[in-house]
Image (cartoon, rainbow, N blue to C red; front, side, top):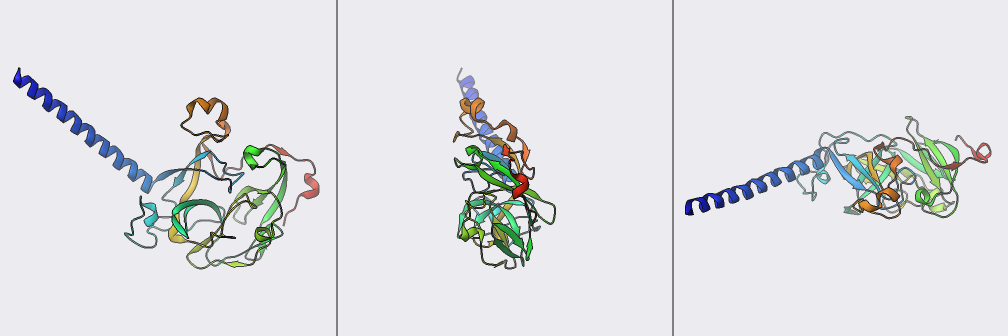
Length: 270
């Protein structure tokens, strides 16, 4: 009887140790995937509307631009610069660490590469003194997409490399719609939000983003929920999940519910 009790205790102890070992393995594997391959992010603000909405959950490709110390959990200063580095392309949507506070993640679109001259004139983006093609697509009156309660102009920009995306034009704000010329230093990038009049980006306090601060390229929206609901509130899914956004690629231009009245009058192709 005593022998059986001892064997039972050994089995219990062995089961606990095995569970701990499996848990450690799972955590290590998750950390490895998160560090080297894909990291999930959620969108808390509207600076990238209409491309990314509050409540979008997305995967970021960690290997797209190589690795820096910011690729590793807790950002230990094990090395400087980047290893296996690859340069972002204009138009990439990128997650990066805020230069003034590296504990904070930002997500914006790359519009300026090292050595570029960037300026916004009358709301039109200029790269190296060439206007980016910009066409009026119509007006949108949908607060889930725009975050405001009035119709907003939507423009589609197409960069020289063929990357297209929609932007929101809320109002003319001289500070962001008529800027000075920004000359991007070597080893840095110029970032802008697609919600052009409601984005703290390289035109304002963000400044130039060092190459080391890049985390990865945003690639896929795997979940999206509206009305301030959380992904964990499963009972809200039937009402608030944006089903049309699930498993959509971020470089895909989504069809927006636009009012295209007057489009021929306002269309421009700078």
